[in-house]
Image (cartoon, rainbow, N blue to C red; front, side, top):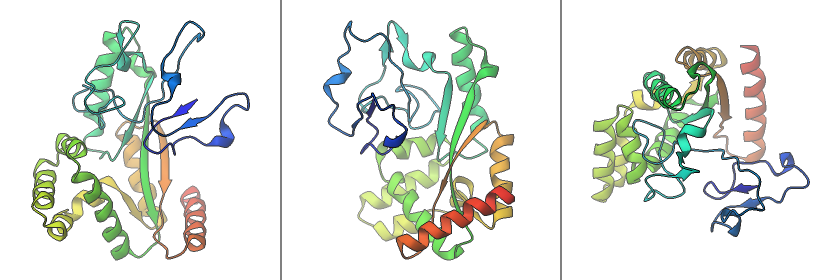
Length: 239
């Protein structure tokens, strides 16, 4: 099992089969060279395949790879689900329809599509602090060309272009301040338990079938963050 996404922090080592060997991070290990000793392969993608228009951060291994073929078929046509991240409820339906088109072309039933959405949730914390930290998070992505293009494709053409232009001119503080409030509110979920539940329900109405809720806390210490997240989990379950 190779967890090759970024630094290799996507899989839980405790959940891997005890007979499997877990490889993490870069460089790409020799196991990528498959031969007759392997009877099958399963890809679990963090992003849309390279070349997929209007999709989630499309790339395969590296951004300079445009197409990835497996036994003569595009890798994206083999998948049975889609995983989204940093997505708004406005743009999600169009993305789902794009995947449905690919499924129909591959002879699959679109109604079987599992739509997973990673939703970053920060509950019951100081709103000023939350907005400031989430703005920093967005700026870190918006100032990378490949990620910037993704945000432009999901409806933030002006915001994404302004942020990266300011950043490239060395005006880092202005780039940070250029991120509008409504962009933060559309991409992240924060507030009290009721507000967070309502926003998550909007994702279901937009087409999500499975949520991957990523609880975040900006408390000052690890112990405080752990406590805050555990409380948030319980509060959301009851909301």
